[in-house]
Length: 592
Image (tube, rainbow, N blue to C red):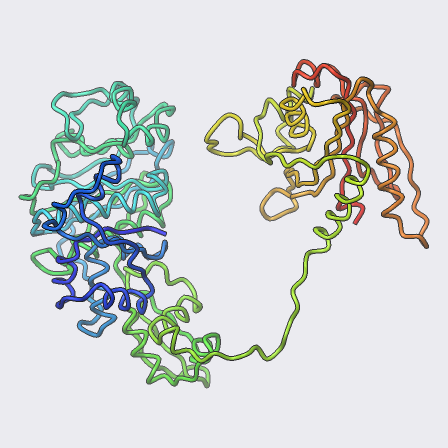
């Protein structure tokens, strides 16, 4: 859950009164947020640097750290929190956000070049006119961008925000994608010009910006935004240009959001302009920008239209468990910034709800139900016992897996638990297998080379466990019951889990007969006494085993597993295990 740091005194001034800490905690609880911590700026710095406490903090402004819901992007700054609380307390109504009525020829324009489709295809823009900044407002403006970048923007991979002093620029603007050697500009907080490829090397030593370099550094073209004089506004998603940097004297702000996801870009832009348009000369009025795409489509943004939603009254009060009529529900929704009115449609009473652009989290009637419950007060909802009683239970597969575990443990094997993720090399090459890219689920952006794929067999984990414990007395008998994941076009997610038993035996001899005996014991135990199921072993051709010392396990006419003596190419060369080993793997779900 995101935590927003706000100055206590400035927040109380925005709310119109002073609260004790206990009173403010109660207000937060009623609204559905939480006062997480009370501190000061010096205390935050000392905590980061692990310094001792200082008594001089008594004279410094108190900082409230407020925890908000992850999908409430409008609460990621003081302006949004204060506005929401004022509306909740009935001190003001939900503001009406308007698009400035200006002639088409006077509207700023952004032209998108076709090459941007290779890296970040979308851009949306807006202008805030006549903004009045002070230091607190300026810091809040910057902090909101950082919070959005960490939250909905997914660390700038989906959306990157650029804000500029419009008076230093001259439209129309162009959004392009060029080779890094063709882009040169002075970045924010720097004094000299860098080429884009030089800039990427320069920022590899920057603690804040280096974590965003991977987004574009391997691309043949970098996204860049120019004005009509070829002044660089920004190199998204890395850094803005110094030429258009915002200061406390800035009056007209140009906001651009480049993105790989247009929906999220619109949400981010709406959040920025709705939060800070209250400081505009004409309050809550936003100047639009026309964006021209290379396919001929145009769009005027931002879209601050209100979304209409009709919800039957019974669908609102029923899930909460309270009895309210429409005259009681409408004021509750108004407290949550959802302007509502009663309508009569299709023979039933409904609530017509106007969802403002600040509430992008309202997607379904259930979101409306949640807001009504918050406004009504969770503590005010009467406690009732369920009309029907149900008894929870474990899934059959989990119960069956535990029985398999117990049976293998009784045979003298020790259970281990290994990682479900591994490297491509361990999953394929070290097991003497070829990667046809049709089996394993690949991790899109792995943190480390050790976690590149989801395992397709339990063998890798057991061999790694044996490798790190090969000094133990022989025989070493270990097993694991766990899931593997394989690609499956039939499933809606494109992959499927499969519960398996993996058993590894290591000693001075291969122990093939030990593994074979355990397999026969398991198959005998799981058979129903009154049903005859044919069990046999057939020759297999798995690359991790000796050719003539491996078999497929057939159970009821289906192949449910494999067993064999592991080839030295796998055990010795792949995992540095010198003793012979045998391995058994069975599909538990097939037995169930």
